[in-house]
Length: 559
Figure 1 (tube, one colour):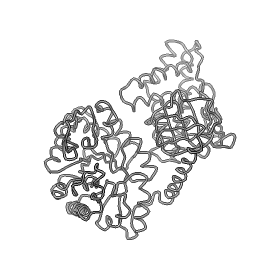
Figure 2: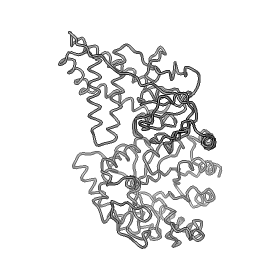
Figure 3: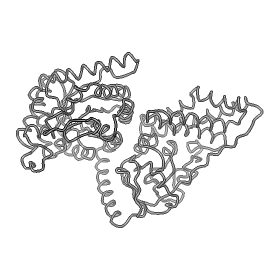
C-alpha cells in the first residue's frame, strides 16, 4: 500500500479503479502571417464561439446545480470579453505578425503569470481560469468541437482522454480520476455517474475546479505533487476527501475500514435525500433554524452537503492557529469571502478572534497564566490590542459585500465590552468608506452568551445587538466552576445540570423580550436528549457539526 497526502478539496470517500488522464499537449506552432487583420478576425470569431459555448455550459450547470453555481462561467465569459485581454491578443498578432493560436496562448501565459504573482490566494486561483478560457479559444481555432455542442459531439479535454463519450464512460465502468490538473470546464462536463472521485497533482481548495467538485458531490483531493504517478492507472485506490489521504493498492484493513465509513456515509445520504430542502419544523409548526459550525473555509462544503440553512459559528481563530505569523487582512478577506460566496444567500456568522485559554499561538507572545480559562483571552485581547482586532474587522466587513455575513463577539461579560467593540467596528467602517471599499452597512452584530455575567446582563446586552448565540461548552464550565480541560472533573461538569439549563432559559427569555433571536452553537445543541427541552424553551436556532444537522432535523420534524 502506498499512502499519499494531498489537500482536502471535497469531502467524501471513493473506492475504485484509478483512471489516469494523460496530460493534454497544448503546444501551439508559431507561424508568421501576412494578413494580421484576417488573423484578428479569426481570433474574434473564435472568441465569440467560445463565449457561446460557455453560455451553453453555464445553462447546463445552472439547470443541474442552481444559478449561483453557474456564475463561474459568467465570470469566464467576462474574461474572454475583457478589452485588456483582447487588446493583448490582437497586439501580439499586429506587432509580431503571429498566428491567432500562438497569440492566444502567449496572452494566456502573461495574464496567468500576473494573477499568480498577486498576494491574494483567490486571485492566484484565477490563473487556472484564464488558461481554461484561452484553451477553449485555441480549441475553436484548431477546429476542435466542444462537449456542449448542440449536436451532442464531445471534444472537451477530459473527453479526449476517454472519460466520457456523449456522457457515458467509454468502457462502461466508473473510475477515480487521477490527473495533473483539471480545468473548471472539464470538471463541469464529467459524468457524475461514471466518476467516483478526483485526485490532482496541482490545484488548491479555493480553485473554481475545487468548488465545482464540492457542488457535484465528488470526493476530491488536490496538490499531491510529485506523488502523481501515471503508472497508478488500473490500480485500486481509496481516497478520503475529508483528510486529503490517498491509498493506492490499499491493504485489507484499510479497505475494510473505509468500506465501513462509506456505508455510514451512504446511510447518512439516504437521510439527506429524505430531508433535503424540508423545513426544520415540528408537527405543531414550531420553526427552528438549523445551522452548522465550521473551523476552516473548506468546511463550507460539508455545510452545503448536509443541507444546513447557514453557518452559525465560523471559528475564525483557526486562521491564526494554523499560521506561524499574523494573518493579513487580505488573507482573512480571502477566507471569509470564499465562504460567503460559496454559501450564497445563507447566513454566515463569524466569531471574532477567540485566542487564549486552551488555544495558544506563539506569535501572540501571551504571558503564562496560572488559570488561562479565566484570563487574557478572546474579546479581552481584541479590546486591548485594537490593531489586531481592526485588521480582522476590516476583512470581515469587506467580505460582507460578497454574502450574508454577521459578526459575533465571544467571551462577553459586560455592556461596555460590546460598546467598545462596536466603536472599533465603526472606525473600520469609516476607513473603508474613505477608501471607497464596499461592505454591508447594516451588517448584524451578535454576542456569544458563555459567561454567567452575560446571562445576568442579557436584557441590557440585547438592547445593543441583533442576536444571541449560547456557547454551552464555556457556559457549563463557568456556571459549574469546572475547568473543561481537567479530565478529573468530568463527573462534576454536567452540561445537563439544572443550573446550566436555567441559564439557557434566562437567555432565551431576555432575547425574546427585546425582539432578537437566540440560538445555541455549543455541543449541547446536538444533544438529541435535550432537543425537546430546547423546543419547549423557544430556541430560535441550533448550530451543530455538519454531520449532526440531518439527525437533528429528523428529530425536530418528528416532534
